[in-house]
Length: 239
Image (cartoon, rainbow, N blue to C red; front, side, top):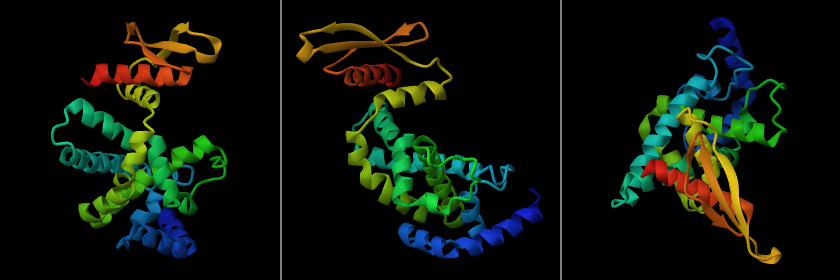
């Protein structure tokens, strides 16, 4: 898509979504000065493959801004916390599933400019796009209004719901994301022992990443044992 065609589509999109953008601005308590940022934040690559005109660069920026804001707040809330503790708590707040829930609260899919080939009826696809849209919205706000309004939104969404995120920490998901980010092998969860009577079994699970085997996790269910083992593996990396 060339620049002229993109600008025409941008104008049409703004006219179509002007009322819904007003509702979004009410939800985020911020009014954009340059709606080009907002339109780009909600444009999928299926509509505009050029990264200058879709949400991908804003998503990249938003990810960085969120990390900075959350890291700063964690430093303040846990003045005695070491790097490992702070990293684990931040990971819980920036994991994709939690960002998707923030995007859902703000009803971001209502404004999404995307081709029907992207199946938003699929829950995994929808959640992925919600997380992407939340990050791109943060990036757009940062460019349009700077850190002050952007920080307010992050604090009123992610930070305000931090207790919920920390209660639902998905250590297995965090470990998989960590391995992907570090270009490591995918973790394998191996049941190494099952003990106890049928009505009260105890599972022991080890995590193996490449040739490395990490301390085991225990649980009354396989899933809880996997979560425990994943937590131990993360602690090994972050300590």
